[in-house]
Image (cartoon, rainbow, N blue to C red):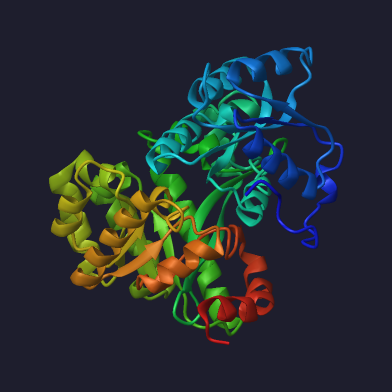
Length: 421
C-alpha cells in the first residue's frame, strides 16, 4: 500500500493545477501514499505534516493565505484529527477538508456530523483507509459546490416579512423540480417540488434564505398556496406535452398541516384545477405531525380520504419516527440522506437504512431514498429493494421547463444504472 495507484489511470483535473494541499499523517508510508494520489490528481504544491501541531505551524507560516485543501488522518500523536478539525474551523485556515482513518467508522461519522452542523468547517467528506482514488476524486468534486446551500447570511441580511410579502405579490417564488426515479427500471416516476426565490438582486435563493422567516406567520399559507398553484399549472402543461403521468411531492409545514381552514383552501385549489388528487403527495415531517398531533392526524386522514398521497419526510432523524409512521396513514416513506449518503461505505448507516427499508416494505408503502450521490449507494439501495431514488447522482433540482430535455438526455443513463440495459 506504499505506492500510489498505477500511473496509467488518467484522472488529473485541470482545476486542481496550482492548488495547494496539506497532507497531515503521522505514518511516513501512509503520507507518501496520499501524496502520490494527490499528484495523480494534478495538484500543484503538496505540503506535508506529521501531526496536528505541525500542520498548524505550516498553515500559520502561510500568513493568512488559506490552504485550498487539508487532508488529515484522525488518529495521530500530539494533536489528533478531531482537535485539528476544530482548530481549522475556528481559525479559518483551509477552504476544504477531508478526514481519513482506519479506526472505527463511527469516529469518522462524528466528523461528518460536525460538518453537517457547521458548514464553516468546509468538510468535503471522510474516507476509510486505505484511501482509493475513485472515492477521493468523488469528494473533491464537492469543492466549491455549496453556492445554493450557503447560509443566508453569506448573501446579505435575512429577509424581512415585508420583503417576503412583496416577493409574494411579485410572484418571485417558484418551484424547482427534482426527479424521483424507479430503481428497478430507471424510469422517472415523479418529482419533488422545491421552492426557490428568484430575487431581483441576489439571484435564485434556496429555502434556507426564506423558509425560517415564513414559519409561524400568516405568509406561510399564502406562500404554500402560491407554490401549489404553479405546480398544478405545470402538471397540466406536462400532460399536454405528452409526458407520462407523474406524481409531484410538495412539502407542508407544521402550521399548514394543523390548520383545517388551510386544508380546505388547499384541497379546493386542487379540485378546481382538474389535477387528480392521486397525482399529488403531501410531504410532512415528524416534527410537523407532533406540533399539534390531534389536528394534524385529523387533517392527514381527510387528505387520504380524498385520494392524496402522504409521505413521511426525513424518516429516521426524529425521536419517535417509527411510532409516528405506524399511527399515520402514510403512503410513502422518505429516508433521510443522513442514512443514505455513504451507506455503502459506513456499516452503521447500512444497518439503519436496511431497517428503514424493511419497515416500509412490511407496511406496504413506497420507499424513497433521498441524497443518493454515488453509484455505490445506488447499487446498495437497489439490492435492498428500495423503490425510488432522489439525489444529485440522478439530477439536481431544475426549473420546470428543463424537465422534458432532462428526460430525453438521461433516459439511457438511468436505464443503465437500473441494470435494464
